Image 1: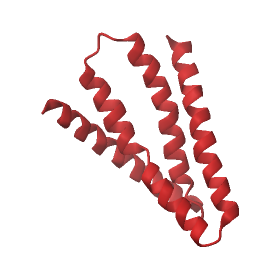
Image 2: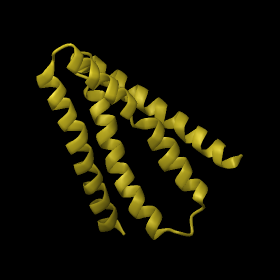
Image 3: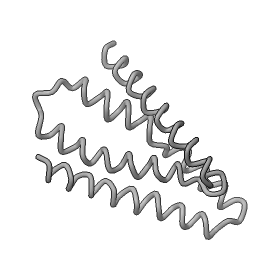
Length: 125
């Protein structure tokens, strides 16, 4: 039961952070192009890279801490299902240039951010 509570608590924190990020982006052009989703996915990818290194080098931490931050916070923060629906909507409405840009930013940007987070985590340790 405590595992579920850790995931739920972290998920709530992550979802609230994603909402705040999306609202901020929507106030600055994010309604035209959903870059808030891109930012959430890229930031989340970077952070999971950092946390992967952190948890590997701090194996004495309770597995509950990893559940709270990785499965909970990052799971609630990143927006892969939202990303897919936005990408599908762009493709279905004929916005193929934006769809390709969006696909590239999320996939390549997310991978690059994860790699950079992994490198940053190793540099810190």
